Image (cartoon, rainbow, N blue to C red; front, side):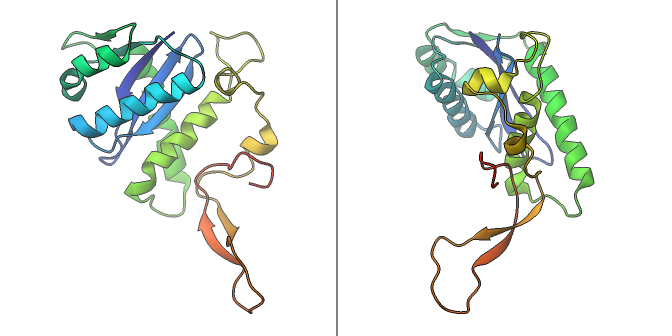
Amino acid sequence: FFFSCDLVFINGVGPLVSVAKPMQSILTVPSMTKHVGPVKRALLTTIEAFEQKGIKDNALKFDREPAVHANRDYLECALPAGINLTAATEAEPIAERSACTLKNTVRSIMADLPFTVPRKVIGELFKYAARRVNTFGTRCLPRGTTPLEIFTGRKADMLVETRFAFGDYGQAHFGKVDNSMGERTTGCIALRPAGNAEG
């Protein structure tokens, strides 16, 4: 396995986008800035997420971001299969294509919302968009198989996956309730499905 990475930003905020090959699964981890510290944490979170799914001995492909270059020695120790940085004038095409798809998806969602998305939840919007993209099959996988199924080990349940969309209004129950006349729920804005049919 190997994964290609790229940093994506909208309104100055965005995630580290990783594409695992050959499963074609897209993973996003909030980075917020291009500084060395946040990028290093995002890369380590990405590596751990793949290792938790049993995907180890990964090789990393990245375009020549200064923050990644600064962490190269550390990443070479964390990744037995090594790290491959492109030339200064090149980009990583696999990650670039997926990043473009995610940015277009995010922009279309933001344009359709009746409110301005706060900067602090743009990372969650990227996660929502990546999960939506992962529920569709690709030419790299057998017919009827999706990247989400490969990554999670279960078929995508459309009742669960489409229970609500990013930005939908809902009511959330408080963890504790009593016999008073106080409110039992509070209004909230959905970020992404909770993984069950109830939302």
